[in-house]
Amino acid sequence: MSEDTKKKVENVIIVGGGPAGYTAALYTARANLEPLVFEGFQWGGQLQNTTDVENFPGYPDGIMGPEMMSQFRVQAEKFGTRFVTDDVDRVELSTDGGVHKVFLGDEEHRAKAVVLAMGAEPKRLGVPGEMELAGRGVSTCGVCDGAFFKGHRVLVIGGGDSAMEDSVFISKFADELTIVNRRDEFRASKIMYDRALAVENIDTLTPYVPTEFVAGEDGKLAKVHMRHAETGEEIDVEATGAFVAIGHVPRSEVVKDQVDVDEDGYIKVEPGSTRTNLPGVFAVGDVVDHTYRQAVTAAGTGCMGALDAERYLRDAPPAVEAHWFPGGEPAEIAPTA
Image (cartoon, rainbow, N blue to C red; front, side, top):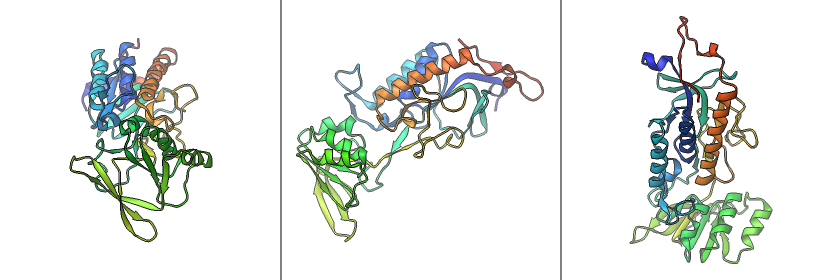
């Protein structure tokens, strides 16, 4: 670790590089806070694995997910954001409003405020063809991709409320839709289950487990191999669209023992804000949101997190004593706008 790294205390460190993290970077950079962003090795979040994005405002002709994330990144960098394209190894968050520490291996970075924007990952089935056919018939976001399947035969895999919500939405476009569940009973609430099954073109297939997604001659999804969960009977179900709706996993593991999280691991924030239970620590995007999980809502909370961090630095910056190191040498403090 260089002497400069040891001494400097950043105004803001942002952990995560999806729509939320990049928007927080843009806003804090324009506020002259000179944010440092640890965007992750696979920067861009889930949109890096998305093809056409047609529901983000400002793109009337749609845009490819990776291209949109690149534009987000370039815009934040234009105003002075600095990026580290690597994954954070660990974080030490101050509990009393002091300086927070972010580590890449043994390299330590310090900041007066931290914005957590690590996102969430959709749970996967882990079967052959699932990743290979992503964007070519297999999806994990019904609201994002449902409109692309107008006139198709579609499967929704899952038994919870998310699967029911996705099914109702996708059924507006698909000709036929089958909800596939590994049990005869569904985990979804009765009201959501009844709402889905009341739709004319929705039916169910239980208790079956998908074992492989199979491509046709055009390289797109053509059918799904299924296995009966009790008898082991195997069948093929023809489908040109399949939505895996078995939940998400928030990427909060690096901080979940330091900030308050709910039973599913999503970081808790004060209602109407991005403030966590720790002073100077804010959380935005899908690592907080288990309801909407859209790029536009993630970007919105990224803006909120930046504004909350800016106000914190203005009104309650860490005490100067927190910036002194052993031997009495003061740290270099980045000027707060």
